[in-house]
Amino acid sequence: MPVVQADRLIRIGAALLRAAGASDEEAHAVALGCVNANLAGHDSHGIIAVPTYIDRIKVGHIVPGAPWTIVQESPTTTVIDGHWGFGFHVNAKAMELTIQKAKTANVAACTVFRQSHVGRLAAYPLMAMREGMIALATADSGRSPKHVAPFGGREARLGTNPISIAVPSDLEAPFYLDMATSAVAAGKINLAAARGDSIPTGWIVDSEGRQTTDPTQFKKGGALLPLGGTEGYKGSGLAAMVEVLCGLLTGLGFGVEPTGRHNDGVFMAVFNVAAFRPLKDFKKEVAEFARYLKSTPPSEDSSGVMYPGEVEYIREQQRRKSGIEIEDTTWDKLRTLAAGYKLAEQLDL
Ligand SMILES: NC(=O)c1ccc[n+]([C@@H]2O[C@H](COP(=O)([O-])OP(=O)(O)OC[C@H]3O[C@@H](n4cnc5c(N)ncnc54)[C@H](O)[C@@H]3O)[C@@H](O)[C@H]2O)c1
Image (cartoon, rainbow, N blue to C red; front, side):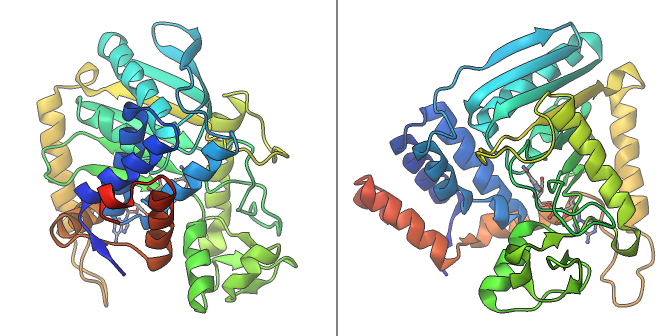
């Protein structure tokens, strides 16, 4: 497996996306967003996604240079139509505007529809966190194909519907949650299937609704299970609420859109900490709280407690130093694309 430095990977991703029709700004936003996911250790949302996004441009599912329009707004709310632009770009602009509104009004929220994949969801709440605000973001997969069975069901009717919340603090590693509401990401099942590994029980059911450790059953009509194991009704409930915020409140609807066009509906809300208590005090206390959690005596076989967001920061420090391992299949796809766009020499691929 090649090991590649983050900067080089961003250059490669951006050049390929530009060649596929993205503007400089769009290409950079997407490539940076993907590589930041690699750095955080979420390789399923990393550079591996660039060939998929280029395929989607080719079939017209992603529209480079798409307009970004406000459909409806008030001093605290905005409804944004992304016109099928790149989610990374469309959604970051939506968050920028929401932060600006919260700077004046102290709270602000937005919905975004008709945009492509937004990638690693934490990217957007982290923007608000850097401005001294608490932010919540939820995303569904619009009406694209579903992967998760609601609790008690055997057919996929929900997306992996992630939730991310970021909070300002004095900590070096930001305090934020960024998680799918399914037991595990779909990419992890596909990886196990490709490697011929079995998976733990509790991740998927087969098409008959039976628990299985065979990952190949996922693509044969099986479904991911919601987060929570025997208490999966809680993950299922969270996923359903995310779908209401991102599918229904955006007007995208629920169920599966027959064309399969990927459409990440997003809901985001931002809260200005200073409207509740002095930011300095809050940031200090969040850091103290994180240290309090971390000082919990470890349970058996545990290396200790981490706070949300910490593991991503540790991985990022490691990967910035040692580089990012890219699986051969992804590297081959990047090389093929570079050759097709006559960029192989320029990108040294
Ligand atoms: N755009 C989309 O449609 C979409 C859909 C699903 C998931 N995603 C993204 O996929 C990524 C992966 O999600 P996931 O749920 O598979 O990730 P995950 O299972 O690794 O969980 C991540 C969360 O758990 C925390 N965490 C992990 N290990 C921990 C530990 N030992 N102690 C304390 N906290 C710990 C992390 O800090 C993070 O907040 C996320 O970036 C998410 O936004 C995106």
